Image (cartoon, rainbow, N blue to C red; front, top):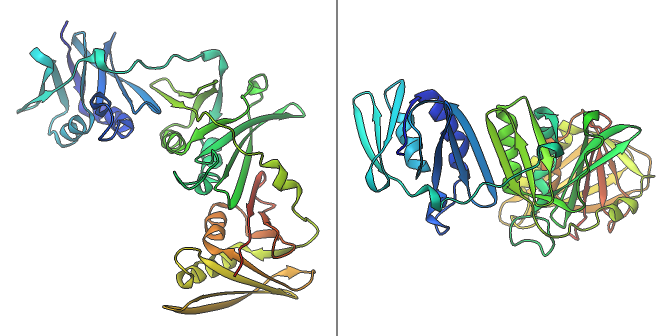
Length: 376
């Protein structure tokens, strides 16, 4: 039969906004630029995918005639967005054409056969557990910034490693990211109902998948999540997100945690440190963002110099009891780390100009950032 439905504009627009950003870009299969529309009982089900991320969203609809069709996602989204009507009618015609009626507006859109659309992955509901969006969003925001860019790394660092650990009958979800020059680890406690759920070794979510999960968090207070062998599944009553996992090994990050010297550190006000780094970044070289740390008594002097722009220098009070040190770092790495951290006081573990530093805060339990030094 041919699809014919009446839909509330606001519901339709909300659903299309969810799915249209996942559609494939130019150069991929043409059908991936479309959204699949399917009728089911009193609902219209919208599905989009780029073969790495797939999303399905359900809205209430008046089903005049059941059916399935695919339409260009961006075009139908724009049409619905500007339509001056409370309700929209879609009516499938011959040769995959679809009539679009909104009040006095009548349009025709060229669709494609639904049979050409990729099958949506199956998943196991039993492997899922509930999680608060605030927890998942915090994990993502505190790790995604140090994910390697595509083509920048020989390792499988263009995604975030996911781990789950049970300690004293409490479950913790951990995310780890690295670009080869820095490492970020963040963990949060999750509900005890997940204690029996296991996550395979080298479960790595690609960066785009993390971005879609973050959008999911912004729209939902709570959802179910599951980690299967090849995919991550996220589900609410109205929506379903499935992300294909990366199929490679993540480097063993635990080794570097064991070599950090935790006997020598300084305490510093986070906002003062962050503001100083932002100033240094203006004067640092574009490619390496170099900043020099000189630590003596209870003062750290940070300097940055660019032959074409000028130089900057700032002194910040710290609490420090070790020997004098002179170190070089990428100041942008510090900026991105400090911007996501909680707490007013930051602890920075340092030792020599050749060893990495470790940053943490007593008010940001579970967060650790490691930054490699650089030669100046």
